[in-house]
Length: 150
Image (cartoon, rainbow, N blue to C red):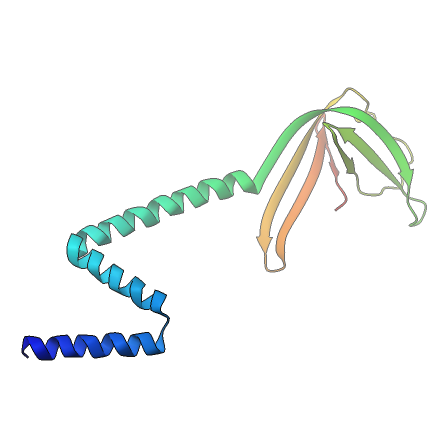
């Protein structure tokens, strides 16, 4: 195949791509081919593998930090609230500028470990499910765990 025929086929291919695809897509393909031609296939392949591995490590680190969060705070205030369901009660904890509403229970007394000034741990775990992001928060005080109502 001579040069004139080769360039004609390339020009026709570019025109067809421009008619079928967006000009941005065609420009992207041309730039990608130019990079591969200029740097060589092996260097581009090595660069992309390194980029993929580094991105995978970074995403894994961020995911591990995001998955579980644990903070230690001191209780500023505790109160009891009655619920509408079956005369149950809920404990409200105020600590670190935030408030948490514990799951309802039949007990009308505030637990001894949840006194003002006590140090508690707030643990939030996040999991990705088919229904979306699921968060579960628990309050830990002196080894006792209390679930937070969502």
